[in-house]
Image 1: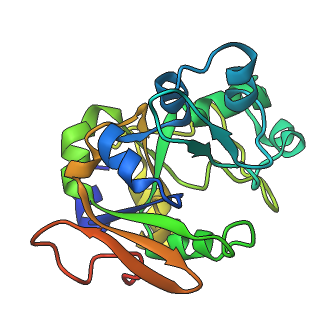
Image 2 (image 1 turned 180 degrees about the horizontal axis):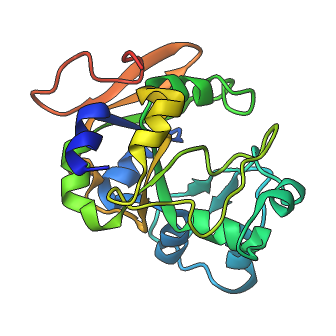
Length: 233
């Protein structure tokens, strides 16, 4: 796949964050779990329990001089399911560490809606960032990876996954996936390792979504009022 193909097929990205997180994201950037634990000074067993173990519930973290934060749960995964689908000798701990080093973005509005309506999240307010794909990718091109499925879910029949799951744009077989699934589902996740410290430079709009309603929190000056979580998929 070329960068031009990526930008043409998926001009917008979406990220679902915890309610109330936008001020911290705007200040510190959109950080992976591992980068967030670095910022909050977590180490030792406290860090291991968050970074290398399954999180059935979201976990609050705190540090002097920083606002309270939440590390989101991993309800769609389980150790037992991962043990059946991991390749390359990877263990569930290896996979959790792999995911916790990355920030994830949806390329499909339909998949964003599916997550917003999931049983685990639909009762609680969520913050949705709408992002300009071209701006984000061009500023972080060396750290961009693509994935053909939801890497954080093992529900139903878990897809095999391992060291080759995340591919660079140049190495991603877009033509094959597009032929098999259509453009909308040819790429499922766009991933950036470590995080996006300058995410505020790429966000077009931020909404608080709850009970089928999206309330605008912030919009980039000059961006369209149509930018948001309910754009056509």
